[in-house]
Amino acid sequence: METLAQIHKRAARRHGGAAKLEKQLAKPKSRAALRRLGDDRWLASMTRSVFQAGFVWKVIDAKWPGFEEAFLGFDPGKVAKLSNARLDKLATDERIVRNPVKIRATRDNAALLVELAKEHGSAARCFADWPPEEIVGLWQLLHQRGSRLGGFTGPMCLRHMGVDTPMLSNHVVAALREQGVVTGKSTSSRKTQQAIQDAFNGWREESGRSLTEISKILACSTDG
Image (cartoon, rainbow, N blue to C red; front, side):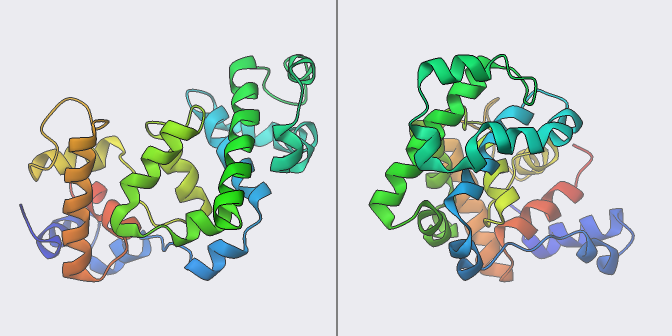
């Protein structure tokens, strides 16, 4: 497996030099900044990510003010208590995308945030304090305890909120295959995700860079 310095050198060569590559590297939010985010914004991010999955993002963006109204400002306590009858009514509400399964997922994820708040003081604190060297464990929590937050969707939600996490895009997975980190067809098994975590931890220790930056460097290093 190559060092991150070697991978970065190749990525820089492919993207106009080191300076231009650096401009493409997003930075995660600090732990303090993540803690300050309201749990309503976490539910909003979960909902946006769920509804965007397999759908035209522009449509979700255009309807987003309607989503905020329909889901009561994404207050987890209120949304978790929505009745089945209210969810059925939302499935006919033209302010939002009328997908009954994803609408129900919003209530389920609100319930998850309520649970996390009870366990950690706030859901935001849970996400903020999660160690980046164990980030795949947070992916698994979202997949197992949330609704429709497996695969790419859970990490996308976290990234949108500023959590330091890799994104397993096609290009990142291709780069991980080139490094021998991913060998099978899927990246969803615990064994594969632990191998991904171990590789990112090694590159993080070597470089001092965030998982977010490393993810982008990998993506820029390959044709995919």
